[in-house]
Length: 108
Image (cartoon, rainbow, N blue to C red; front, side, top):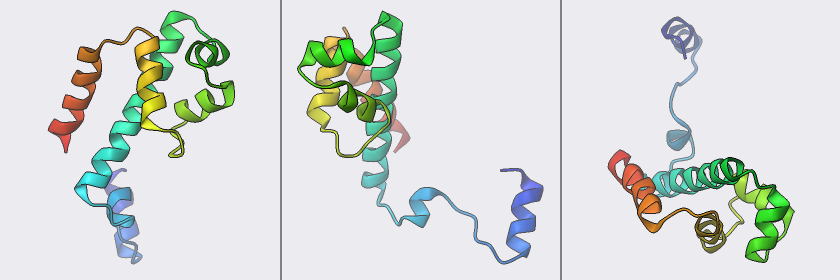
């Protein structure tokens, strides 16, 4: 947000903060959400890179297209197991997944 806009909002009595502050998330909760979103984005990027449809990915891991759409959209109801299974099926190595997690752990 622009500094000028932020100052205007503060002058009008608004509080400026992060979503984590608003939701009163612990650092662990915030990191977990960030990791899930990063995995979701990685699944979509890897699927697109391979030229697969959501339906193709779903069939290859025994799931449904709608679950893949939810996974890629960051739906919290999707299990971490399914997310990791999708990444592995798309050819993502354990090392690449580890690097993704290391990036999140350093940021936390």
